[in-house]
Amino acid sequence: MRDRESTMIARSSDARRPGLRLSLVTLGDPNQQTGGYRYHRKMARAAPGYGAEVRFCSVPDRAWPLSIAPAARTLRAASRRSDAIVLDSLAAAFAAPWIGRSSLPLIAVLHQEPGGVGHGRVRSFSQRALDHLAYSSASGFIAAGQSLVEALLRFGVRDERIRLVPPGCDVPVERGPPLDLRHGRDVAVLCVANWTPKKGIIELLNAFASLPEDAATLWLIGRTDVDRGYAKRVRRRISAPDLSRRVVVRGALPFGEVGRMYRSADVFALCSLVDAYGTAWAEAISAGLPVVGWRTANLPRLAEHGREALMSEPGDHRGLASALQAVTGDAGLRARLAAGARRRSGTLPTWRHSEELFFGAVHDLLELKPKERFDPLPIVERVTRRTIVRRDGPSPRGRNRRRRR
Image (tube, rainbow, N blue to C red; front, side, top):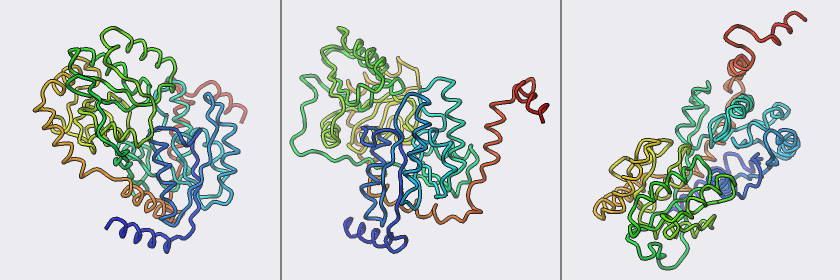
């Protein structure tokens, strides 16, 4: 049935806009193992079935803000032999000064709020202004999470110009029997996240250290080289006597193997503070795993405390440790949460559904008439006013400019 439906969707899309050529502007290597990059690769592979072609055009990933200059060349390349530009939110700030030079319609795809994630105050402020400048040229927006929809509405974008397209949560599973992840202990706890401070790896390790030695084995899956300073701190914590024998680091794995890890674990734990959607949480729930994490980011939208997950308030380290102790030490609780996760999994999007939503959104947004598109002036004026106006009035530079006039 699904194959037949997919064929019908493809034919409908082909008839609607045959040969739609999209240039997807992203930052750095599009083959990186993160949720956002995987989202775009999934859409690129699915594009021919929807009468489209997605071509990656990457802005070189350099230290802030050095990627702005080479982004001009990237935008020129993206504008050639294309019908529209799809702008990844990771590249928006760098592309902002050059977006206006292209006559092509622009669709922004958001995986993070304006200003980015995990930066210092100066970069966050300047990147937010550049992101706003880039988005002021957009014909429409595709948001990967509800929090991003809300951010766009606060930004002044009209609701009819925003499409919510969450990622799929179905993960391919390599063939073979379940893996023995417990290593002689009672429970196997899995965490899938790159090692960055906002993912809360050290907080998870500290909470896990409160468990009895024979209670559980913790598996860490994800890139360890994203933030080398943070990685050193993580490895130092793992090497401590209370953790060294019961934490296994596997690094980045192929998605098929990650799927097998989901199917072989007993509990999933992730202390992220920033995920606009939380693909790893959704994948774990789809695999029928009880979830432990902070009551923040998108997790409360994916799961309910006591039904599929145990959530403590952000920064409540004792609460986090108590949640891990409860789910690893009580088989009955673990079974009830797992049953809730299996029920919840039926309501989560698959990649096929996400692909259908994505290309339907692209077609709809490109059909907007120019007068229906976003008027950037109010937003640009607000951002500009914040940067040059102080509480005691205009900056000296602003006063000098008026005198020269």
